[in-house]
Image 1 (spheres, each protein chain N blue to C red):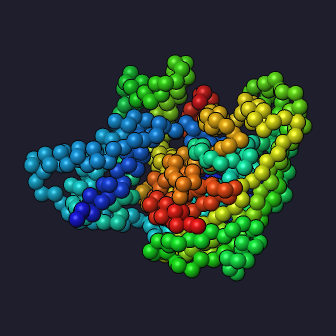
Image 2: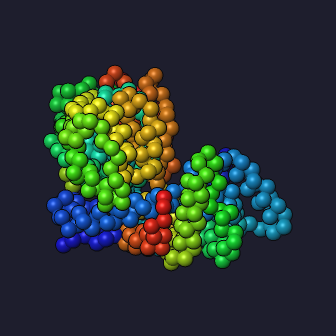
Image 3: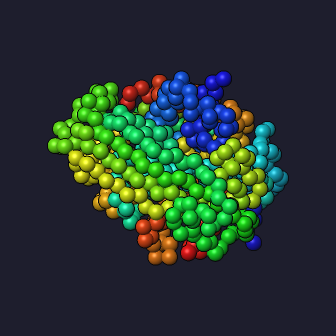
Length: 163
Length: 376
């Protein structure tokens, strides 16, 4: 009989890795973050963390990933490393443009207010507004307002970078 | 009173979660339409900027890695604590359930809209027999309805749901055989309600002057036009659809009623495939040209180009920020499973003998497939 934690791991791991991946654009780094937050949860709450654990994990994943990217942003020389090697089949010029856009987006996520970066990562990882509200600890009506401001801010930060 | 930016933003993603009075306001207010356009444009751009390669987490490998790490950690620091994660400051399980159902219904409506070829629809539909997933954002779908930038769209009909008292009446009203569902998951109500979505005709007439202006706004020039394109018309005839809902009443929901708060809820939808005709140019010429004009989102265009034979294939939009899709077989017919990676619900859509069927709701993938495969 699997424990509550084991069931939680199986059900939530892909999404937790996806949330971190949305911030980092790097699957290996995202899985490192996912491992870290599950480890943290298990050490804090053991084998039966309860019904609120998914929201806790999602918040932890987005903030841990943002911490990672902000630390990396301070080491600009290393940024190109996480601007995605997943498009090996594309033409080199397009890949270069995608890498540059990825770099700009990651830099923007590191620069904009954390509450904006967090809501962007959660939304585009597929969370509903209710789930975002739980993870962020805000009312569901606040989520839409925050997301709207975050998207406008991202547009300003990234400007007209080619897509 | 005009709704807030936050409400407009949510409307783009979870329209059914917005109060009926607000939805009615949005349908009539030109000022809010302008605001919605700006908000949608930012959302669409954010979705593209934040797109990452599809994750491929190997859960078993991750479990093994976790076990190795945690085993080592416990040796070094014994005494794992126990307890429950405290409740967040704000949480509403009832609200969560309402949103889940709302998203599932919105997903169904999206499939029905596209499979039946409503207005975003440079998509070519020739009573096709195959389905193909096309990753889009919800904001993309809305921006694609800006086909009006390239010509004149005329729609006759709506997606209004008319309640029907029973299966026979629904079948008669829709002119399609009503699906019989032999398997209802435990936890869902066994007694369904019936409704019919009226059919209609949508036409799009290409206008070179409008298209040239749209291309200029997008910062480009129109590619050379094939002979006969200017003034050519695409007409999609949409068949009525039967909607069978379990666990809630889809018709009353769309008339402002409340969503369920408890058990699983799902719908089964059936409609004859649409028919399409064109004048002036062939469907392939029209689609190829529209895909080449400036302003069409690059990802959508490339996916559509990859479809192969557009006269045999229905593109089904899969929200990239909500779900993933995989091909499935439903009693020998080709179909798509739009997965529950969102944990909000699942959708299965398949086509056979000139009919498109869909199952959608707050079901797991396996439950949705079980329902779909029990339909006869």
